[in-house]
Length: 223
Image 1 (cartoon, rainbow, N blue to C red):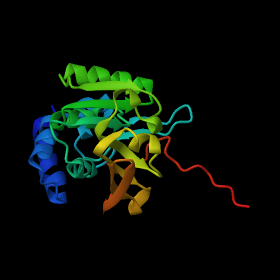
Image 2 (image 1 turned 90 degrees about the vertical axis):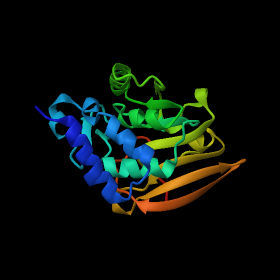
Image 3 (image 1 turned 180 degrees about the horizontal axis):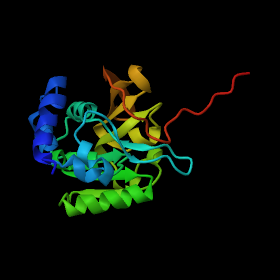
């Protein structure tokens, strides 16, 4: 029988602490949330390996979906500087793992997912584990979830080619949006901050993470 608790502690020591994740609250959250509960039964035995884990195959023209590798996820959450006063929108909730981590860091979390089957799975898993400050909602990821806006933090759980204005518009004044912009090894962890009606962006570190559907730039016509 797999000792998940030991595997989780080893993951924090070998994958997070070694990649400059020093935030006590972030490390504590990763120690407490059972990653194995958020992946399909067939991959639970490898829930703590240092890689993205597929949670949903490609289907109906949609790409496969993954639970993000723990190291970039933890670094992005550390960059997010989440506090217990924050209302957070997570875009691309998947099966609920990042939402569970965020629930330990924030006041409340709205987790937006466009795949209804994944959203239902996330709702069930989060409820069964007692993460009661997360609400899973369905809709187009690139449109955000205006019904609960404004947010202190919008966290995009995957890489994008561009950030739609609809998402930065849902930040409260002084709020921030954290995302990986670009695909592959050259992609950058980026923080957008809203100041009044304007938004500024700053880049931090390279992060190669799986892309989210719906955020590719529109094709440009060349005459």
